[in-house]
Image 1: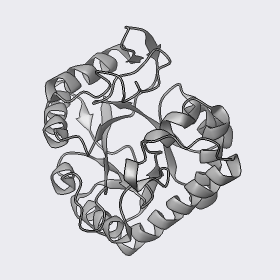
Image 2 (image 1 turned 30 degrees about the vertical axis):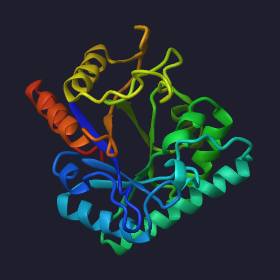
Image 3 (image 1 turned 135 degrees about the vertical axis):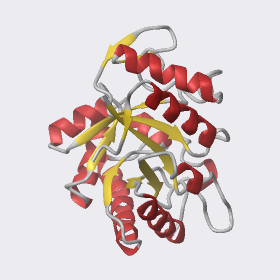
Image 4 (image 1 turned 120 degrees about the vertical axis):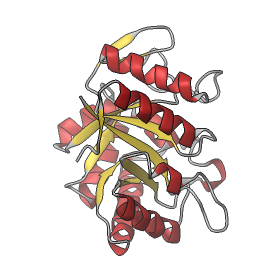
Length: 252
């Protein structure tokens, strides 16, 4: 079995530092880079692309809502599908350019935070995101949540895609992520996060907090770079995967 290990990175902004991207790049195989709306800026985007190239890590755009104050985790209701297409295409195009300046190539796109949660509740929003990706980078992969509207949108639009589960987040009974306002939504302990992943890999399914299962294909595992225990969790998870005979390698 082969699995990709991805993390959300490039989330620093100006003089403010978020996460330890350099350490994560020694562990992960794929990175989702903030595009300046919820986090990041042009300098951080280019620097992250350069570091990823040196470390042999694949990079993708990680577009979110224009909400630096809330790190893109506050819902922005009322956007039209046209506005959402523009929002995504703008960020994807910007990151693709910064990746080129950094001597690297953007391979994929993954939605961030509240934008991703809303897309996985609403097929029309997921399709709007997909159209934004297709306009800006038609050959890019769409990193989706399996069995959810983002995967269905990729299939309808003819976008290549790969499917991720989360190491450090739990799932509600809709198989979307548990709302961060609820206790236990975020898994901080590295061993608990690893056990959470191994249960899902063994089952070939997403497992909700109540024990419900959704059989899916799994291509990648995500860790959030802003989690204080992100690097420790990534090391623990990768060691467990390799001990189980699973090859950790980039999807493309």
